[in-house]
Amino acid sequence: MPVFELKVKCVVCYLLFDVRLNRLCCCDKGGVMYKDLKVYQSAMDLCVVIYELTRKLPYEERYGLVSQMRRCAVSVPSNIAEGAGRRSFREQVRFYYIARGSLAELETQLELCFRLGYICEQSMINTKQTYQLLNGLIRSTNRRTTNSE
Image 1 (cartoon, rainbow, N blue to C red):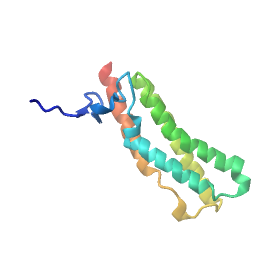
Image 2: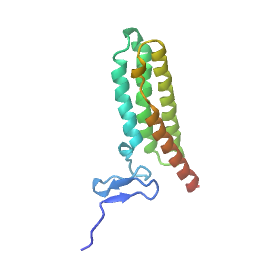
Image 3: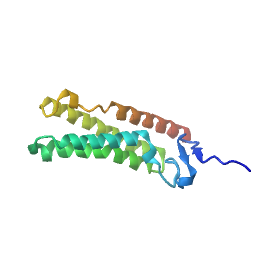
Image 4: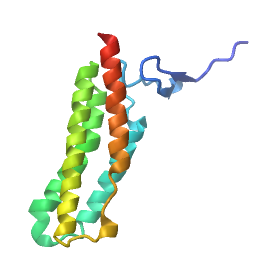
């Protein structure tokens, strides 16, 4: 009796996925696995931290920095998810670049909070891991774009 492997590696993006889950890989046209991407998980964790941090900011910043920081934080995993759901690699990478722009905007707002004295240096959130993971996703998607042409 043959033994079937339940974990399959995508031949395009090399992500492992379980065939029993009836999900296709993020690079296939029929479905997405963005929730399994480390960069998506990191961006979601960052989003939660930003929401916790902005609760402590002054009330007068509720419609200013708080609102803007939360929108930026939500934009990062949202654009990763939207990009993963797109058909072409060009479309995917375009949304990953938008996510990277939102992350850079968030870093700027964190720096402003620090300079205004709203947060201390220990509260400065390290966005470096998410940024590095996102750059890796952009690089690998760009490679797939050039290979598919």
